[in-house]
Each structure stands twice: as structure tokens, then as C-alpha cells.
Picture 1 (cartoon, rainbow over the protein chains, first blue to last red):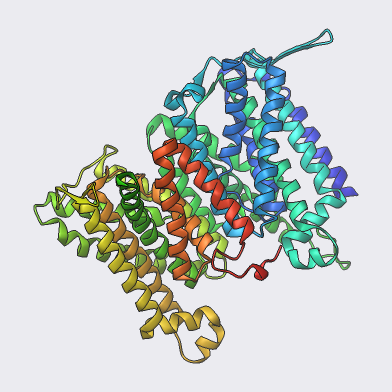
Picture 2 (tube, rainbow over the protein chains, first blue to last red):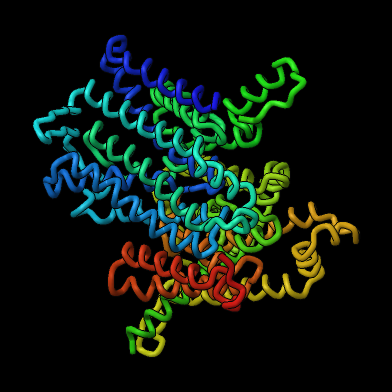
Length: 329
Length: 288
């Protein structure tokens, strides 16, 4: 109960503090933090699948990019109202996840095989985006994607300005944190953990484990697609590298660097790598994939628990011993 | 008739290349439990080896010896330096190879540049087979691939190495009680898998542009072929490769390469749904 309140409080404080950013940051700083928040939501969606369900997606950028492309295609090519396009991005991606989950999880595909097939899905999505030029704009992608503006029942919310874009990113982050918080502290979270630890045993307890894993995939993909759609609304474009292998590996790196078992880890990883990207791309503009790959290898080899995981372990060691065993949070 | 023959020949070409890549993957996965995400980069390594050999003036055929040698050394170095440290953490080993694939691509790009390199065709000209014209070199590739595949399968099935490998697969502990040094066999298996991938790279080099990212094209179908075939079953892997490569070529002539690729993947996922244990498995083996 205390852990539940503490985690919820931490999320509220984080979002609350971030809400002051437009007052203290200049426009450049604001755009940097906007993108970090949206990538952060993508990282949270991957962490949910990896840390909670034990199923690792190697092609998670596909779902981020599909969300971005659906929003862009419906707004640019079909002139659909922006809120509807956002909803379509989420629902269509969720539907795709449902189909993938049905075929893979119900087919007994798990762990490494699942990872490989998700990578293949990302490669296919990337090729489709590049070669289906009339719809996706080919290599150049789609530009001039309109920002989100909601105008229903006299309620007008405009997210097209820089501050508006930041607000959208912050709202999306709050939604993602709320979803993970709800999952973590409900029965559902315990079931996911049980499946991650021992799926056979969870199945013996009467849980339909493929259905639960599919549900987790749908939630994770919806969050990734939401982040992607918001990204294309804020950045006003959608491009093939949004669903490529490099972004997929970078997403894995975010989660691995921060710590795969912690939601905070996903966010820390994004902040570290994105700031590093900004620093490095001014000096060495083309070598980012090399840095991501190398950094990723080093983290997996040397700091498998990630920054937050290592920190938590150290903090536990430093804390004085208690006589009563303390429940793991 | 001509169309059918030409589709069959093109399919045989792609299937033999995918089968080579998949066979190497299957050997590494079977023995180490590591899915080598950097396997495509060994294909590229073989292709670059062929480029270096031919551009230095040596005949192309020398590349068919140099490429696997380079691939074997690189694969063994990778296994000895990195993967062997992660025996207890197979998922992390896969992650490491995934990161390495990005690193290798960048290294290729730094050394050879991002532009496509070409390897001259060592056997120009065309053959007419049952009315369909077909490049001679592709026939050579099909024949050499078949020889390498049969040799690898026989090696795994009959040689002492293969018998020990299968013993480790069946029961690692029992094998080590009998004095088998499984770390040494893991090293050799990784080298063998990488060498086969590098041969595949050298074989496709004359018919394609040699670019840093070329491995990815063959890797995805090869992975799915291994899953379709059931890991640890070389014949199943061949069948999986035939499924992936054959369907892709057959569909490409009707609906274009990208759609064909997407459709083949979807069909493969459906096949995996129907036969989770691999195409050759009995239906009753199914679990879910």
C-alpha cells in the first residue's frame, strides 16, 4: 500500500515538476524535452513488455512508427480531423497487436523466437514505408503533418504551438505512467509477474497465459503507437527511420541502460541517451548507430541491471539491516 | 513453361542462399542457444572478402576459400571474446549480438564506404534450360551451395565433431561428465556457422551490390526458416528455407518484391501458429 502511494506520488511529482518547463526553458530546450518525453513513453511501453511480461520485442520501433504513419497518412492524405486520426492510430495498432498476439502467443511462440519475429515485423514495416511511395511518401516520408487540435462540444484544445506540443507530450506521459501504475498495483500485474517467472505454473493456476500475454502486447503497442502519433503531430513529419532497426535497438538501449525492471529506468535511459545524442551529433554527425550499438553492448556486458537497478541495489546494501524481513516492492 | 522454369530456377537460387544463412544460424542456435543477430554481418563480411580478393587481382574462386576462413576466425573471436562470457545469460547474449550488428555495419561503412561495391561476375553468359535463359553463375551458386549444405549436414551427422555436438545438445551435463569440453565445441560451432554465412556472402557478392546493410535482407527469412524448421533439425531448416525463398520468388513475379516479402512473413507466422514445433513436427506435439 505504501509502495503504491509512493510510486503514484513520485509520478505526480514528476509530471508536476515537468509542467513548469515552459516557464523556465527557451524554445529549443522545450523542444528537446518534448521529444524526450515522447521517446520516454515509447521506452515505457517496451519496458512494460520486457520487464513485466518477460517478452522482449526487438522491433518495437515498428509500433512507434506505425502509430506515427497512421496519424500522418490519415491527416495528410485523407484530411481526417486530427483527434480522430490519433484515435485511429491507437486502435489500428492495437488491432495489429491483437492479431500478432493471437498468432504468436497462442501459437506457443515465446522469448527469443518472439523477439526475432518482432524484428522481422519491423524490417517489413520499414520496407513498406520506403517502397509504398504513393501512400507513405517513400524515403522522404510525409511532411506537413498537422498538429493535434481538439474542437468538440465547444471544447477547444490547441496543441499546435511549441508549448501545446509540450503539453501534449506531458499528457501522453501522464497517461503512460497511469497505465503502468494501474497494472503494477493490481492483480493483473501480479499475474503478469507470475507468467514471467514461470508460465507453466501460472497456467496450472488456471490463468490463460496466452490471453494475458496478448493483452500485455496490446497495451504496450497502444502506448508505443500513441507516442508515435503524438511524435508525428509535434514534429509535423513521419519518416522511415521512425520504424527502422536503429530506433528499435536504441529503444532497447534506453531500457537496458536505465534498468529493464524499472519504469523509472526506461525514463532515465531515454534522458541519458537522447542528451548524449544531441552532444555527439554536433561532433560526429553520422556515427550515432555505432555509438548506440557499442554503448548497448557495454551496458549489457558490464551493467546488466542498468543504472536504476544498480542504484537500487547499492541503496539496499547501504541501508541498515532490519530484524524483520522487508517485503520486496 | 518458360515462366515456370525461370521461377523455379530463381527460387532455387534464393532458397540455396537463404538455406546457407539459415543453416549457420541453426548450428549456432542449436549448440549455444544464442540467436546470432549479427549473422547477417557475417554474410556481409564474406561479400566484402570477395570484393577484396577480386579487387586485388586474384581470381574470384579464391574468395570461396578466403571468405569462410575470415568468417570462421571472426566468429570464433566473437564467441571467445564476448559470447562465452554470457553463457549463463542467453537473452543478454542475443542482445549483445544485436548491438554488435549495428557496430559491424558501421565498421564496414567506415572501411569500405556507404556506396555499393561490385564484384565482377566470374562466369558471365547465360544458359538455356528448358527454354528459359538463366545466368551461368547462378547455376554455379546453386551447385556450390548444395555441396556446402550437404557437406555441413553430413559433417554434423557423421563426424566425431557432429556426434559430440549432438551429445551436448541432448544433455550438456552428461556430455561434460564424459569428458567433453563443451566450451571448445561452442567455439568451433560458432566458427562453423559464421564460415557458412561468409560463404553465402561470397556467393551472392557478384549478383548484388555489396553494401554494409546487405545482411539484413537475408537474415529475416533465414531466422524465420530456422523457426519454421525447428531448431536443431538441419533438414527442417532446409525445408523452412525452401518455404521462405520459394514463396518469395514465386510471389514476387506477381505482386512485386516488397508485398511478396510481407505476405511471405504473414504466411510464415500462420504456419508457425499451425505447427509451433516446426514444419516437420507431429501435430500432437503442440503445446500452448
